[in-house]
Length: 529
Image (cartoon, rainbow, N blue to C red):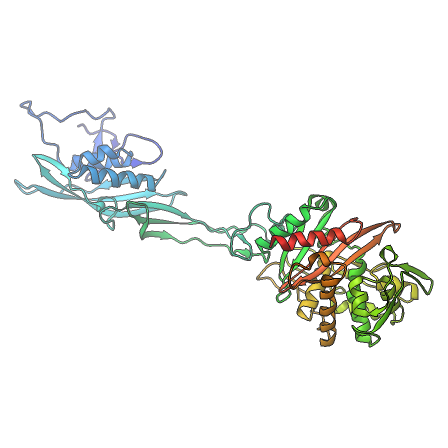
């Protein structure tokens, strides 16, 4: 070997470059390939390869990923080969460097010696992982061999173990209410807005090097750089409820939407729109529609709080009636005669509720609507929402129309879901979509207790013997149907709003013709839960 201008360098990683190791102060070579086979002495006899050279060859083979060659230089080839192979697999694409200390003088006739080695792995991103280990060598059949031990790869490894690198992510995530990452395509009408609102949840990644057993199971953390983790954001949407809601609206040919809220917390559980509705924008949350007979919940509340009627007060329900200057009819002109308000409510008698509204003060309906959050302006983090528009009605005709959810009264599906939640909870819950970000907006006052009891009873009768009998098989469902004329009065939206336990919801089918299609979508929704 001649001194020259190149040092032995031991490196490993993505390429099989020529690799060696610095031994002592300087170990250099002329630049040609090392000679194959044992060196020859002056008498032509094979020279014993020195311990330092065996150590160098071993580290060179490890660095270049030649596990079999490295193992052949040890006294336990099978165990060494397996551990070196697993380590290279567990540290993929990571550069390996080793620097050997000077060989200590071996005692005359000695059969063993040790050489320290400084090991450095260059981790992804350039971070170094450095430590010192020891290469023990011993004479076996007049040949120096590396005494195999897992500590050759790392001083804390035990038999059967190897090294494994793992990245520790630092980015936050969008999570659903179950704690699982939100999947692409999940509630797109909501999640697109949420992602824009929260921005990139970018943190600084970290890493961990672990001792793993032969099966790859972690045994001990050897080195770690913790990540700087960005906070995750939890949306309140429930995957099961959202899936059922989406399937329900997807089964409708017209634009259809469904909004579900948890009455006890105000957390949004589902916001679903079908493709036809998506083409019109986020109509479930923002767009105003005539609520039709679903608004009779508000009209009934106004009458109950004013003391002009209770659930058992007899009301006339003719097929058609002229009230002031406004002539209204029931669907298909059905008539019931004089019936309790609860029965008129369940059958959705327009003539009864038009007359109730006509006899109320101008501000009675807006005042009652405020109990249900329909006059509230909530700022819900992550989305833009509207609830309702219920102006004071100065004329009799305006009050008649407003009493049956027509005229200038407008609500959103989001608002009607809150209205249903109000009956379930007794007061309007403050809506929320991002778990850790409170909503701005004042909570409306609670409904009077007697009103809550009456509304719950009347909404139950809608299902058990009224316009939503199709839902009678779902125990505990209470609600109100609505057929809402719009435009020139020849076309109608279909509505259903209601609740079951701690689940409140509204369904709107735009231009659905009647409430029947909305009730059908509700049945599909409840059946899918």
